[in-house]
Amino acid sequence: MATGTQQLINIKPFDGLGYSNWEFRIKLLEEANVLKVILKNPPRGTTERSAFKQQDVKSISIIVQWLSDNTLEMVKTKTTAKNVMNVLGTTYKKKGISVHV
Image 1 (cartoon, one colour):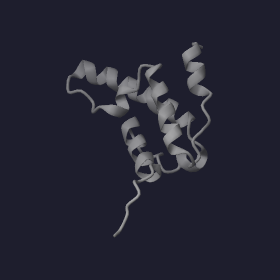
Image 2 (tube, helix red, strand yellow):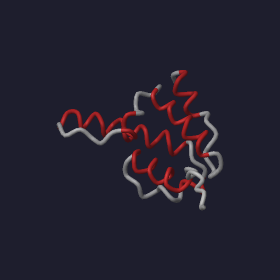
Image 3 (tube, helix red, strand yellow):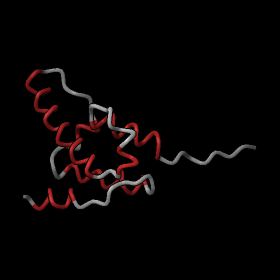
């Protein structure tokens, strides 16, 4: 197993606390050459789409290893890494503080 892959697997699973730190660690997906699948939509070309799908499957596999059981429940039905990250971000990302005058 490659060193980069070992680093990816050893990340503490996200348990609902400290989302911004966990989201920062997601950038380690770049080491596995799959970060782009959570940032971009699938390409239109058949060849590119096939490669993208393989990277997406790898990305989902890595992200799932980084989730605790309680957070995994909310993303089990998602079919792309981008959708998984969107659900987690919508649920756990802190919103800005609003001041009412």
